[in-house]
Image (tube, rainbow, N blue to C red):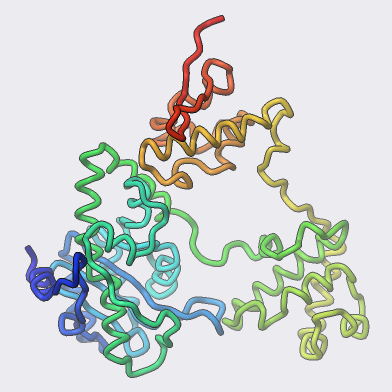
Length: 408
């Protein structure tokens, strides 16, 4: 057993039936200068497995502002202060052969690609893996308690991670977020391997690793507006153009989009399509700073572009895409998928979403249920149900069972 883990486990005290995680700051190395960071990188590039978590804020910025990077490996824990040292050189570790362990790491990947211009070459997400072991998107504390029997100490989730110096309590809370990730991964992989599901979890982690991170295409920003589907005609084109301008402006200034122009103003301008500064000032949600000088001119230019370029809200993948005769099948198949997920101890959301079912029933050939581990789990069950070759019945115990029907 690695020295760091021995020290942490030896220090555990028992409280009833649950182990309480003690302060771990004595194990945590504070890294706040280039020399210390280089030394840490040299140590980590040869590690086969390491764990990462990040603390960041984005309340007043467009991009996440990284405030702390926590790292655990076989012999210790380090807290890297990105306010004191440029963490870009850490890319050497991320690009290396080691396995990076995260928990619910999608936002951490956005932070890392922003700070280091790369993401881990190999990734293992403990929350994703937990879905193949019967957990449903568990928090880290819940997962550690269930799998390791350790109750993580509670911290202030609204703490200001950009404040310096950090208190001992803040460091303890931050270090605890990575202290058990490697052991958790070890326990999970052993269970997954025994159940023949390790490759499934690895495949799903790779999907997440390759998923685009960051804000996305500015021209698609309008689709995230609340009530966007209530807009009609040219209002949709204006909303698309204006929301895209707002997104680019926010990125340029590194400010939240609401600081540039609130959603209410975007929707109101889209409906009114003002053509002059004076009419722009009369729109609900528009403040004086939005309607003067260069900004006012840019808003009006976005409006004119939107009027000239109509837009349509993409059709939702819902029952309306199906042949009317197949629409009831969505509910039926959903019930079977939920039962199968319970039987197989797989998170239902991980096994198949409603959109996945609609895609399959609509005859699309690139759906997630047609390949990989999902096809292996679902097999021919859905097609049997839809084709009338099988039926569902209550099993007398509150569940459903699939009954194959004989040829008529």
